[in-house]
Every structure is written in structure tokens, then in C-alpha cells.
Image (cartoon, rainbow, N blue to C red; front, side, top):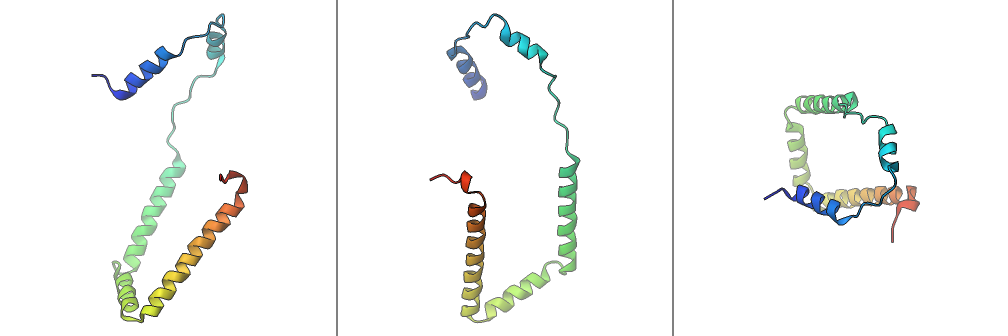
Length: 111
């Protein structure tokens, strides 16, 4: 059994009748510049490398994540109203960010 993509590709090619254009398509394709191969971007390597380096530095500087655990336990030991306030404030901040992003590009919104 042939793979699904090959089967679909074959079916699509067979379903569309070729419209004779007196060789126009072949001439246009011959004049096109050759396709360039995909180059690996140095930018992506730099971004991934710097992100990994920053993550490692943050882990080491936070004493192996100990400061996060200490702060979470301190938050859990506090009042439930502090937790509610932080959750409410972060929800409002996320909603405001989404609203700002939606208002920045009004032409791209769809009903």
C-alpha cells in the first residue's frame, strides 16, 4: 500500500485536467531562477544557544531552583487572600495584554 501523501498527490494530479497552453508554462518554468536550498540560519543557533545559556545560569544562580521552592512555600503558608489577589492580578494582566494585541491589529480580526 502506498503512503497517504503519495496517494493523495497522485489523485490530485489525475483529477485536474491539463489545459494546453502551447508550451507557455514550460518556457516560464525554464526562465525561473534555480531554487535555493534551505540554509541553516545562524540566528536560530544564536537564539537557542543564548536561551540555553541563560536557563543554565538562572538555574545555577537560584541555587538549583531552591529559591523558587522557598518562595512557593512562603506563598502557600500565607493567607488565601494573597493567593487570590496574585491570581486575579495576573489574570487581569494577561487579559489586558490580549486586548492590547487585538487592538493593535484590528484588520486581522475576524467575526
